[in-house]
Image (tube, rainbow over all chains, first blue to last red; front, side):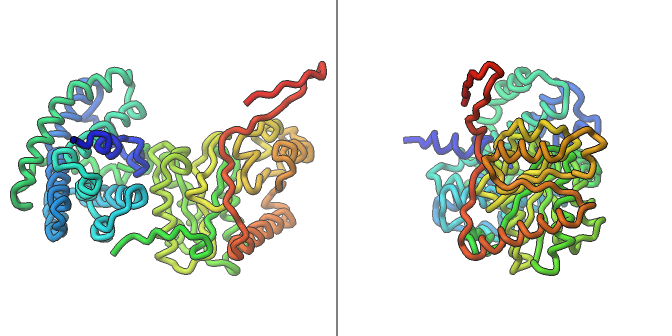
Length: 223
Length: 239
């Protein structure tokens, strides 16, 4: 039987892992003038899901598949490959900060020796993959969890950053559900291959905006 | 290697939270504690800011501790969440600090200024101060709320300003003691050394009790049921 409730637990924005302090790049994008209205927000979220979202999903799916097979030997390689797909030092740090937080939360919520094996500062998608595996979930679930968490986190930040009607924001999320399902499917397929062959689409403007964001004196979100 | 996740009391520093509304002097209280107790205790400070790292910068500029012992946690404009509903970021900041500067005696956690209902989760701190100030209005203490009624110590700060803002400090302290069922209330001004010494004594005593295993974290929790009497002598209660 599918472990649907475990997936909802893992993907829930209320999972106490500190995600609320981040806007998933929305604040830097709004500040830079890349996103100014609801149409811009929808394009931003779609662009993000199709680029860094797909990368995160593929790495979560791969980490999940490996952990489910009791094989953690590739995790270091996965971390290196994910670093290589994240040009911004700031975003590499954010990914590892969020990964540590998720690991800290999950190792208390659902203890498992795999969490200790993840190293000092594991990337968020890799922790998500391992957490999914120890909850009995599969690679596609892990991909969906990180896609949903990252997407809904950025969308929720819109309420604090822009003049929005929250119903309109959630309407975007509703329109994106089919897309996220498809991306999770692609990520699960990619997880069957070698780490070096995982998808690597880029989002250079987000990388640049993230670097500027870190240097700003006043910001609502950490990233 | 794994992040250390020591939660057993006495095996780690006393974790002391400082909460209270914006502008009541939380950073100043922490600076005061650091300045007066840094030679007695090994200290670390975690600040929470709503959208800057202003408080960490203030404490660093005051030179009350070596800069590396003051760290800021960004709360994404959710200071309440960061000390209550989802403490993971702060918990990790505290654990990192304790590990990086072991052994520490006390880690102070400053909440980002919030409203009267924001109190620390016992999962994050062992004891907490709630800071009000006279300039915020003499009636605030009477209003109660979980921080005022349930914190381990209520500080009424800036008492030297009382005459300038028409607040009767003694009355405010009396109101606060009533709201706290006799729990400790400290009238504080950094310009009155005797009150600063009382604050330091409270921290010393709390550390001693904690280190001796005698302190059990108390959750201020949600708003306590309370009563108030109307002029006609009729009393009602609401929860």
